[in-house]
Image 1 (tube, rainbow, N blue to C red):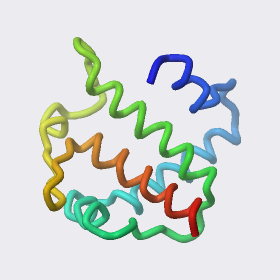
Image 2 (image 1 turned 60 degrees about the vertical axis):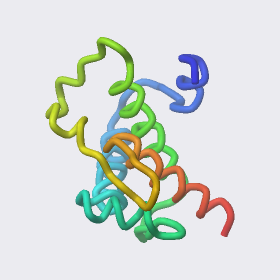
Image 3 (image 1 turned 180 degrees about the horizontal axis):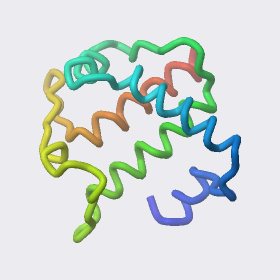
Image 4 (image 1 turned 90 degrees about the vertical axis):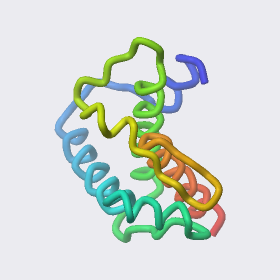
Length: 120
């Protein structure tokens, strides 16, 4: 993914009051969708993630954008993710034969949730 594809995915715009409310919704969605390390692992092992109620596809897409930014920001050489404790970047989530870093696991779960929502 290059920067233009990323920008078009995220649909950047000026930040306003509605964005604060949206950020709160996305934060709540992330907490419910990912939860603890064990919950995240269960989400990856399930045929599809447990979908929290009260959220729409737009909320999941916003979370997807943030999850992808999370992955990109932790994989760019020389990148410093000062807002995240470094020990979290070394967390490995094992789901069957697959191994994920914490950022990759979060991204994978939200991608699977979107795929499920789009196909049901």
